[in-house]
Image (cartoon, rainbow over all chains, first blue to last red; front, side):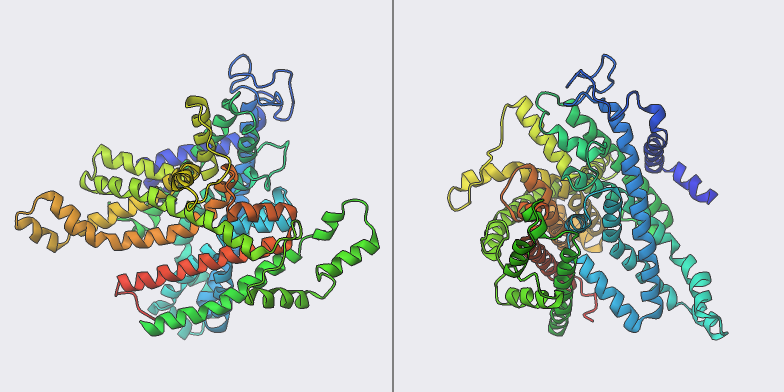
Length: 277
Length: 314
């Protein structure tokens, strides 16, 4: 663990990504302290340019853009973490089962994954949210489900390669129970690619949340989310460009940070995957 | 090879069946059905029953599924509950728009990615390489709706230009078609360019280290010939593959982009169907999307195993 962080800090990409991710996490955590205004309060100064008491100006309803941005970080982080968590855990369980037991179990699980994989991810998330109704919890479930196949495939492939190793055969030959083989001997060996996949998935979860909210099927107004802020700004962006630019910058910086961190973690944990540099 | 393709195509049937079942099941879990939505608050039990019967929604789910899927197999996707128009012709005509958008975007991404990828490989570990890496990362980090909005903002504020709101088909006027698609294609293409560029760079670098390149150089061929005629030619295959993979996600990306630029494509049709809970429209278009997506994946897989003989045809 210590070695991992040391390696992460040695790497320029890793440092940059970690700093960005920490900034986003802290903003989300400390939102009430950082925000200068109530994110939902409408003031009399509509579409006021940045400055004059409003750091990033106000939107068409006179709400403080900066404070909404800060609270929006909460949504992105929360959805990103929980949705990735759901996808990762379900994928881990399914991937372990498919890879370890093989045969009919493997076939059933992987065909189901093929079906899930056959939908472009944004479309599947859209359809699920449309069914469940747009709100925070359902957005999380939808994004979580969309992420399952990626994890299942990664874990299964790794289990298959671990299973063919001789030490697994020897552990089994002395009569160790399946569950013990699975959790004590197979699981630790699939952790590296699993963690890499989890880090990389965070950024796409945040991206899909922003897209859903942008389309009006994610977080519902008046609650602030970066996607919905950008979508609302489109009506007035010629008059008040800051209402569009601020959430765009926030989304790009957050996703960029998670991507940088994901890249660095992959280079450290899974050097095999590193392309020719 | 032929058995491999036949096997893959046969494996497809259960997947397609699963997709159709998944799409159907998903939509029938909607709390409050389309009829509720159509009638609004003044719920009249008699009218409700009549409407349910009219849409065949008073049968058990498996009968409804059978009615739908047997129609689909005969090319009848049902009619829209909102407009009363048949779904399949609408899907096909709108898919033309989405297809054009996808093609233009792919071309844009090649125009950006391949030259930059070559440059990054030749100038490896210089600032050019670093800048191209950063651009590529930026590409995967910008959601298409954010880039699209920024493009519209810059066009209107700086250039006082507003992209046309009505779509011109290619056959009516190729130039008008380009005019209505150029901005959304630039947006989607720029985002897609990132990974294609990285792939171009690493494939080219790998080839430049091969023995045959040394032979070509030893013969005294100019560097331009070495890179473009020999190394690039051998790198094209992995590049083609990643492009194929990207087209799938490009199709998904069109949903949001069509909404921003109000293009009458399949993505916008699906989106409208979803918000209006127009079952036949949503079922049909999602099924169609998934179908295209699966076909592209199959083609990519087959292409891949053809390109790289090390991949076994099992």
